[in-house]
Length: 145
Image (cartoon, rainbow, N blue to C red; front, side, top):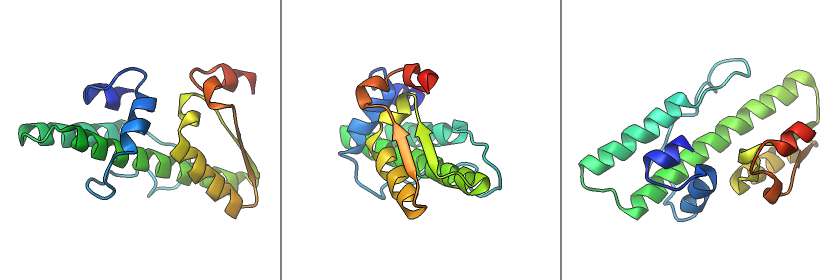
């Protein structure tokens, strides 16, 4: 939501980032995959958010605050979030020996995340569960699980 807001997108930001990412050019921007280079399951997206903000501000300063630039940043941001969450989830499953994963909350509606997690769980011969997208707008499904 915060990254979308700083680029002038509507609330809630997650669906706006996803929609813009569909029009993004892959590889134009690359953002870090926070805390994936260290052991453990902790993660923080504050550095990633700052990286996206700095990139957006640099583009604005250079006169390149076009809709395409916004979409390219959205794609790079989404890719970083999806890859980071997939890495951390895979690590958690390997550490625990579990083969099932439940994804809830607003981010669970993200199609790119669903595809990535389904692929990863397929490799591990596991299963991923999440509510239908229309039930992912708040934490109701997460609380129900």
